[in-house]
Image 1 (cartoon, one colour):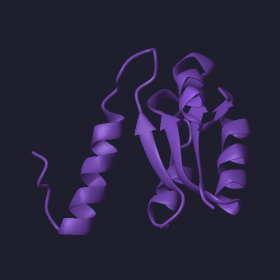
Image 2 (tube, one colour):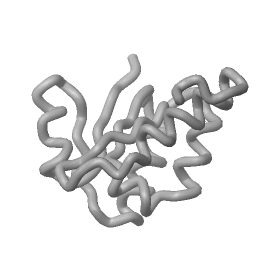
Image 3 (cartoon, one colour):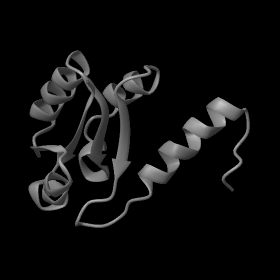
Length: 103
């Protein structure tokens, strides 16, 4: 059975525990890379990552974009929305459809 997790600063992801998701409170990029790799090797289908943390993961997130699982979804954190989550979805849609239909 697949699992779902949320990763980022504790304040941004603690609410996900109330709906049954595993939470992984991390702020250090090296620890986040280790956790993301662990989740990809285990049965995680979806990993929500805060936009603030995603900026430090860079190329590693691009690697997961090419894989069917886990789907890495960027979410805004308590510090605010950077817009990177929407840009990521837009790139994925454009790759799948062939044009940017979200604009």
